Image (tube, rainbow, N blue to C red):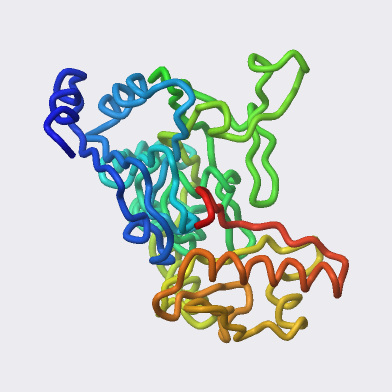
Length: 322
C-alpha cells in the first residue's frame, strides 16, 4: 500500500488493514486460487461501516470469514474482499427462564458457538461443531449437518449495507431452504414478495442471535465429541478442502452419485475428488483454481448424463478465469 492510500485511509478515519493485489490462496481453505484487487480487514463493526460508505458505487464486494466454501478463480477478483474473522468475533450469552440466547458476530467460528452453548448448559447448537467456517458463512448458506440446520435456531440477524446502515431482521423476512437463504425484498422491487439473495443487494450479515433451550452441558459436550468423531472418520480433513462441494439432491446423496460415475479418486492437475468422500475435492499439492473447477464441472456433467440429476454447488466461485 502506498503513502497516498495510507493518507486516504487516515482522512476517512479508517483503522483497519488494506492490502492490494492480495493472494486469496492464503485466505481460503482450498489453499488455491487467484488474487483480489483489494482486501480489507476492519478493526471493528464501526470501522466496517465507515469502509463500506467510502467504497465507489458499483465496486464488487465480497465478505469472507475463514474461506471454507470459497474459491477465487485464477484470473483474480476485480473487487474488494472484506475479512470478518479478525474483528467481528464478539459473543454474548443471555440466560432466561426458557433457556437463553447467544449473540455471535459473523467472524466467530461456528464450532465456538457450539462449545459456548455447551459450557452454558444450552442445548440445540451442538451440530454447529461439525460446520467448518464462521457464523457468517453458516447463515448465508443455511449450513447444517446430522439433521440440523443453522436457521433452525436463529431468532434474529443483524445486517449492514453499503451505506453502513445496520438493520435487525427476523427469519420471517427470508425464504429459508436446504442450503439456501433468500431475502424477501419488497422495498427493492415492484413485485410484491420478490426474492433477493443476501448480499446481492449490497447487504450482508454481521451477527446472529441463536435461541436455545436449557440443556445438560455434559450431554452436549458428549454429543459434540461424537459429531466430531464422525466427521473425522468420514471426511478428508488432513488435506486442504472446502467441505462438501454439492448439495444432496432430494432423496439421494451427491457423494453416492459421483462415486457411481466412477469419479472417486479422479485427478486433474493438483486437485482430486477425494478417495475418502466423493463429495469432497482436495488440493493434493499445487492445485490451481482451474483444476478444482474442472473437477466440479466433470462431476456435474457426469451425474447429469448418467442420472439426469443436476447437482447444485455448495461452494462459491468468484472472479475471472485465467
